[in-house]
Structure formats: C-alpha cells, structure tokens
Image (cartoon, chains in turn yellow, blue):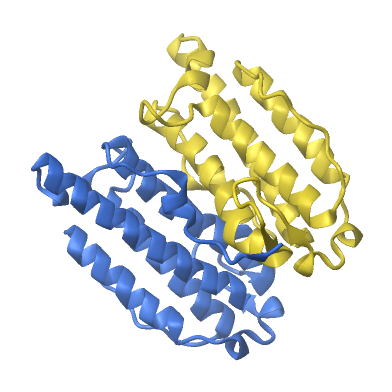
Length: 167
Length: 167
C-alpha cells in the first residue's frame, strides 16, 4: 500500500516536470502558457486544470481512505499553470506526511465511494481496481493534452527515474 | 503482485469494450472503423494500434518478468480494430494462465530492462515504478485517441465494474 502512495508522489513530481516543459514551450513559442490550462481533447472532457486537480485528489484521497486519516480539502480553483504547480506541491507535502505504519491493516479497511451507496470496497480492491487506474488515467490525460498541443514530451517524462541497482 | 496482474486483465477487457464502442460509433457514423487504428494525438506519437499493442505487451511482459516464465511473442502486425481485439483476447488467455503461486518471491526477483544495461530492478520496484504506470499510460492513451475522435466514452468505460460488498 505504502509503496503505491510513494509512487503516486513520484508520478505527481513527473507531472510537475511536464508542466515545467509546458512553460518552457510557451516561452519559446511566445504564447500564454495558461491557455493550456483550459485545453482539452474533446469538448465534453475535463480540461488540463481539472485533470491535474483530479490526479492530485486521487492520490490524496487514496492515502486518506486507506489510512483512515483526515486530509485537507482543496477548493479546485486553480486557473493557471503556476497555481496547478502549487496544488501539486501542496499534495506532495500531504503525501510526504504519510509513512508505512499508517497503512497497517489497510488491505481490509472498508472504503466507501459516494457513487456506490450501500456498498464498500476492501482497501486493497479499492487501490488496485480504482485508485491506481484512476490516478494514472488523469496524469496520462494531462500528458496527452500537453502532447496534443505540441509540448515536447516523451514517455520518460512520465515514467521518471527508476530505482535500479548494479546487475 | 498477482492482484496487479489480474487488474491488468480487467483493464484490457475494458479496453476491448472501448474498441467495441468505437465499432458501434463508426457504424452509426458510416465511416471505416479502421481509420481509428491509425489515429494519433500528435504526429510523432504512437497511433492507436501501437498503443493497444504496447498495453498488451506491458501486461504480458510484467507477468513473464515477475514470474520468470516464458510467454509467446506477438509480431505487432495488427492493422484493424478486429485484429487488435484478437490481440487483446490472445494476451488475456496468456494472463489467465498465471496464478498466485507463479509470483511467490517475485518482490525480490531481479528484472532487467533492455534500455538500462548493467542494471536490475527489484521485482516490486519494477511493477510499481514502471510496469503499472506504463500499462495504464498506454490504455489511457488508446482511450484518449478514441475520445478525441468522437467515440462516446466515459470514465466508467475505462474503470469497469468494481468488486464491492454490502456495507
């Protein structure tokens, strides 16, 4: 469980890095980078800002629901790329406050979803079936919106450095 | 480990379901659905066919590398949506052949990546840091390409049914 929360933080750092690349691209092409915050791939899809907010919430709520600890609410009022970077930084500070011990017993902790009244998921099922796929969905969609708009991103910008050792 | 491999199979079934929706959309709009197989969000990005192939390989190779078992190669020659659906079905049959016992000791099994010569990853680090984010990246990108082209998809088409119990 905790390893997955640590990975969410790693992936949010890569998302922040992708936003930095968007800023550099906008500067080089002389357009307002905040145009990208409102960009989307389909008219009835979340725009970039809401994809980043959703990724942040997915990670934060997973840590909260699996540990049983409360986390601060975020009002989802970010409109600029700098505000989205601040949102990521805020959630990273929250995630960094969790440790392995917070997730003891979380495999079987019951998790409720607002859209599944009267039902609960086992903690592990919630993480594997919903929280992780949902988190990576929003991070990838943010990446896809930037990529579609010309920001120079490759897969390694999304994956980031890996924990290796000598063979 | 095994729970994650099971989730990869679940997500591939949802991807197959998204391709079914693409077929229905093409039929209703009277265009050749296989145009979508070559669609992409940026000119230097993998097209839909290769996103599906990459998702399939990511799941199959994770099962192989973590279990130490050999898996059949796929030649990546799919050009049509029906061929992509057959590729998914083939990989699902392979994944269904794995069981919990295949992954005993996989946390510490050394995994080599062709692009990291002289290095190994611990099995668990490989799964959490690379295999899972990479798998969901390609599934989401396939979804994004379909969504961008007008296929009527919602997040639940990606997430699929969850394992719940009475509260």
